[in-house]
Image (cartoon, rainbow, N blue to C red):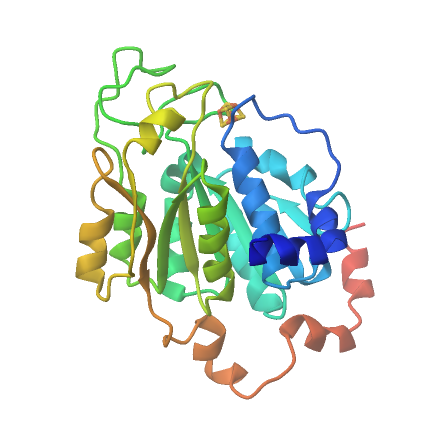
Length: 298
Ligand code: SF4
């Protein structure tokens, strides 16, 4: 038996705790199913207990995962559209002992919230960010996002999208990142491996997942990706070579870890006043009684 499956079987209770038992409401064939499975597996295989993790969701189809993962035994947070990154960054700064995972779609992340992505990457907050890139705003019935391919007719732009799409990994590569990777929603094993590496990373781990959306993005279905994806055998050593590796989104779409800097200190490690401090800020504030302050807002 594959070692990963053996480990999952040995930790069945933890896996079931992450899996939950909510009714799944995504469309048939949606890539979100595979992404959610891969994340649950990665958490168990990395030995992260449900009580030690926080899952933060943006608004979008992927965000329905907030009431599907873990069914009341994990901490989840469902934020405003495009704003999941600052909320998650605040959480990981308040409690660096928690493993913070944030998820967002290409709509909210690369348009409304793109400023937050920029500063999270350059600040190197110790968290994982999963970009569900289905190349459209699925939850609002298939409008064009910044990642929709040029010329494609969408709801709201029936004559075709005018501008070329953003290449999300290449965009992040320009921000001096410490971890950039890409995977595909149709390959749970590959996503699990990439997410495990992201969970082990010391700083901000950016993981783009090319996600199929059979309801609103019929131009790039599962088969389209399977004909084009190529698995990187090694991680490029420099940002320049990483940019070349992630550039093609049409003919040969590379998947894998494009870039990782394992030596860079993360945000908390760069803060002068946190050096040598073993406690988390969330533990330190416990000695202050703020009940009277909160009463003002009752
Ligand atoms: Fe998934 Fe697309 Fe349906 Fe949303 S609209 S649930 S992304 S298939």
